[in-house]
Length: 609
Image 1 (spheres, helix red, strand yellow):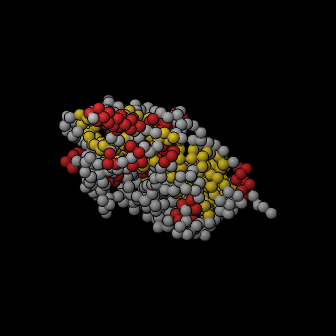
Image 2 (cartoon, rainbow, N blue to C red):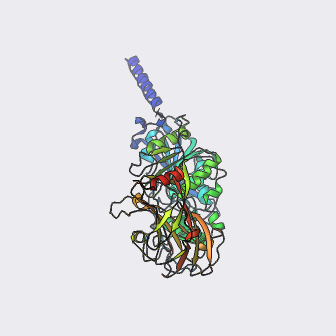
Image 3 (tube, rainbow, N blue to C red):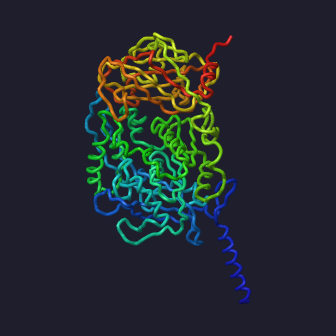
C-alpha cells in the first residue's frame, strides 16, 4: 500500500514538473502568443520598489530614487523563469493639477510683450502602492513579458523634481533599466537600505507609451543604456521647442492655447509636498522661467537641451515610431525628424502613421513582432521589408498600407506659384506668370482659419487654389513655403494652411476632408531660429520654412488651396487686430511633394474634352 502511495506522489510531482516546464513563452508566426499559464491575473506577482539614480534634483543631498512597480508571471518565482521586460514611465500616473483660471499664459497681447504672471495650481497626489498603473499588463504579461512601470522624477512617489525634458528625465528610466540588468540598486522603501534585485529579468527591455509616456522611451534611448533593445514611441514630444514654438514663433500646441514648459511643469508636479518649494524655486522659477523666452521665440541653449535630436548619437535601440498626421497637439514632425535621423544612423527603423489625431499605437501584431524580435531574439524578420505603414483616409488603423519608406520615394517636389487675386480666390499653378504684384492682408484674430478658408473673399487672408483635380493626387512628405513679405509693424504672426476645397461643412467631416497641413513662422527669424530682429515696417524680407509633414490623397473633384494669414486663434499669440502683411506674389511659392512629380500633377489638372 505504501508503495502505491509513494508511486502516486512521484507520479503527481512528475506531472506537476512537466506542467511547469511547459509554462514558458510560445511563438507563432513570429509573435509571442498568450500562454494559459501566464493568463490568470490572480497568479501574477505584483511588487513595488525604489531604484536609486545618479542624480539629486530635490536638494536633499541624496541620490533620487524612482518608484517602480513590477507585474510578472508567478513562474518567474516558482520556476526561476527569466523573461524580458516591457517598460512604461510617466509623469501622469499619480494625477495632475486642476485646470484653474490663469494657469495658462495670457495670449491676448502684442508680440514681443508678455502677459500677466500665471497661476501655479498644485497637484493632489493620488494612488496607493504598489499599483502605479495597470496599462500594458493585460496585453503583455499573458504573452510572456514582465511589465514594469515607473513614475518620472518629482511625480507620484518618485523623488526628485520634474524638469520637463531635462537630463534627469533621461537618466531616471536609464537607472531603472540598469537595475533590471543588475547595474543599479533597488530598495524596498524610499529611504531604507533593504535591497531588491531583478533576478527574474533577462536584461532585455522594450519601452513604449503615448505622448509624454512616448517621449520617455526616446529619452532613455538617447543615453545609450545597455539592455534597452527596442522602443515604440507613440505620438512622442521629441523637442519642447517644436512643441511650444514654430520657426521662431511663440505657438501653442493645439487645444492648449497659452501652454508652455512652466505650465506643464505645474501640471505634472505630483511629488513629495515637502520638496516642492525647492523644486519650484530651482527649476520652474529659475531654469525654466529664464529659458523659455516668450518674447522672441528664438531657439536657445535651454531649448537645445530639451531637443532629443541633439542627443541621439549614443542611441542603439531599434526604433518603431507611431504618429497621427492630424495630431495638432504633438505634431507629426516630432516623429518624422527622429525617424529620419535614426535611419541616417543605420538603426533598425519603422514608422507607422494614421490619419487621426493624438495617440494611436501601431496594430498589436506589429508591436508584438517588434518586441518579440528584439526582446526574445526570435528571427521573425520584423526589421525587414517596407519601412513605412500608412493608414489611408478611409481605412481603419489596424489596416495600414505598406510603403517602401516615408516620405514616399516616388514623391517629387512640384513648385506652385501664386496668381492674384488672393483676397478673393487666386490661382495656384505650376506655371509662373510674371507681374502679379503685391497684395496686403489685415490681421484679425477674431476670424478663425476655418472661417477664412470658406469665405468667398476677405481682406484678412490670401487664398490661392489649383484647378479642380481631374484625378487623385497623392502628397507625401514636407511642403516648403518660400515667401517674400513686409509688415506694417516690427513684429507679426505668419500662419499658413494648405486646405482641400470645397470645404466639407458637415459635422461628421473627417479631419482629412479640409486640412491638408499647416505651418507657422516668425518673420523676425528670417535669418535663423537663433537670431531674430525687429522688422522695419514696409521693408520686404524673404524666408523659407517647412509645413508639418503629411501623407494624404487629395481626391478628384477637390482643389488644393494655399491660405496665408497672420494670427491663428487656435495656435498663436493674439495681438490687437490691424497689423498689415504685404505679400510679394512674384517672389512667393510653395513646393508640394507629389507622388509621381510634376507630370502627375499636370495630368491631374489638365482640361479634358
